[in-house]
Length: 315
Image (cartoon, rainbow, N blue to C red; front, side, top):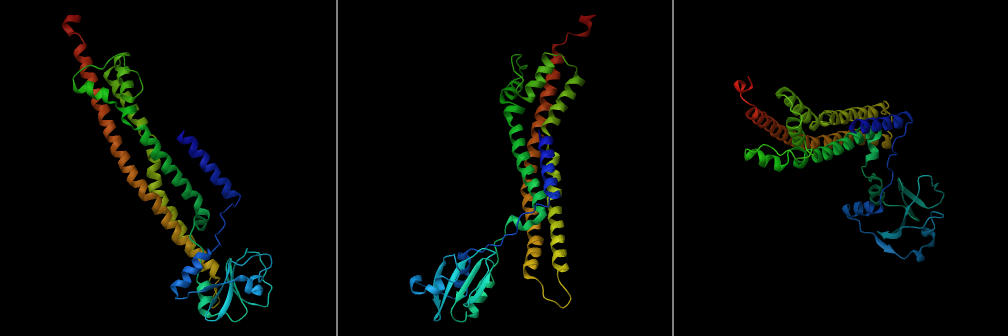
């Protein structure tokens, strides 16, 4: 099942890669972020009644104003407009992404600078193409961890009834079913009369089955930070390649490159670190279950040897 899911995810990844389907960069700024920025700058705009300022309220045709405010005897209206909106007005205007300010008089530098200093919140979209391999790493890490936690439960590996029987020195009951690894080993030893070598080999097969998928966690631990590092290098290359000699730099491209450089590294580490913790726990649990099965195998062999008749009696 793990190999099937692994194949499906990589097919989806390559389809996205070939179709150049990249997540759209976020370009929306929340109005609440703007007012928080004003508060940091010590600006406390006072809301006004929009009915008293029809010119400002209708500055963007077809779109209602979020509010009309005044600061230092300057009235201005705040709008949240789409990217393709074409500003066509004689009013003073300042904007950043989707937020627009209109005023009948000059907009103060403090107000304009507070608006232009805002940037969209960081999101997964800013990871660019690296969102797909990092997303695959995250999904596989969660899936394998949960699947192994369920598969290594005591009830499906080494039930307490088997442990109690061994501690009491009792040969396991022949009525046990094969619902756990320990019971399957008992079945092979009791009902199939397997030799010592066969019993050891079968026990190793059960332990190998418990290790299924664990190698993928090691791949994710090593691979996720490397993908993040590759994203960092890609973002820096994107930034420096857009720097013409002696020219102005496109601030949007600059911010996208820096966001890509920082977020990919952060995402890679954020995936790898929890995976390391869970992988260590699972490895410890796996060692414990393997030791229990080895103990069971040894006790079964001892019990089988005691039940064999002496050689001179056979002769």
